[in-house]
Amino acid sequence: MKIKYLVVLIVLISNPIYAQGVATVVDATDGSGIPYANIVVENESIGTSSDENGDFKFTPLFVGKNLKISAVGYKPKSLKFSPDALKIPLDPNVTDLDEVVIEKQRKTLFYTIGEFKKSAVKHFMSASNKTPWMIARFFPYDTVYKATPFLSSVKLNTLSEINGAKFNIRLYGVAENGQPGALLADENIIGTAKRGNRIVEISLEHLKIEFPPAGLFVVYEYIIIDENKYEFDYKDPVSKRRDHHLSYEPVIGCIYTDTSASSWLYKSGVWNHLEFNSIQYCLLMAVALKLSN
Image 1 (cartoon, rainbow, N blue to C red):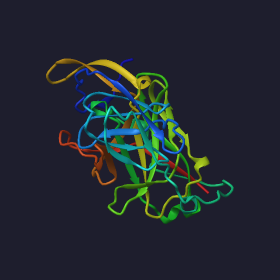
Image 2 (tube, helix red, strand yellow):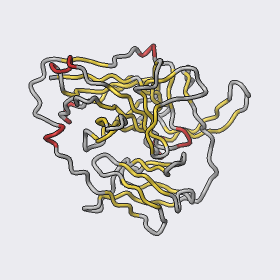
Image 3 (cartoon, rainbow, N blue to C red):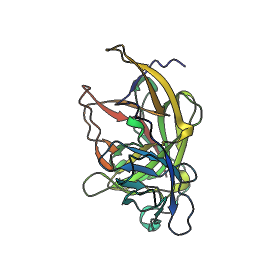
Image 4 (cartoon, rainbow, N blue to C red):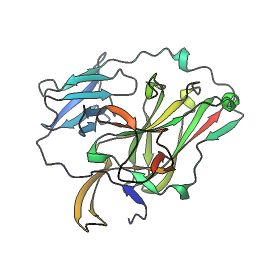
């Protein structure tokens, strides 16, 4: 499939091949595997994701390093990784649901924020160095949302070279420092992208989440699992050099913006504004939120 869109490939350089092992992220209460946990080596561009069974592959580059692990519905954890402890337990995150969820009224009204045209999406971001990046967009609160306070659906623009590629959507409140804070939903919101350039809309109605007064972050999480793999040859338009690369599908569409204030990137275990010194503009994830009453 020939792609006519610019995909932002940031340092997609193949890593050397190392012997791999398998570890498992598990629920501390019952030992069951935790699917789609985000696993990164702190302060390094190394990481991966657990699969639907909670298993993840590691190389010697992980050993002795501090891992930061986060999973929807669980407390985040930092630990020094050892191949002698191949089961990593996470404690469930006990949420006072009354603080973030209230009874949903009969749906009669809709209001959409962040609406975008597919024709305006010219750039697609991929995960660098095969690590489970998370890209966030901040949506501030507006009093106009009072009539339609509940999250109804989220719509994104994906580009995929394979059919059925999975990604995860996380919803965060705002921390005191302005970064993504507490999770607003205690379950993964898994989306599936068909091959090609697609608009994907995912229902949020069952979560019954009210738009927080402090605003919220919609987060797109790359899932680093075998079924999302896509290998290809990439020719640098300047050097004309052709290299073999490995990508994890799908990639996420972005639009131009004049400021990085609402764009965030989770990389190497920390959140920072999404900025690139190599390009003369800022990117904002193309995502629309539909609200209802």
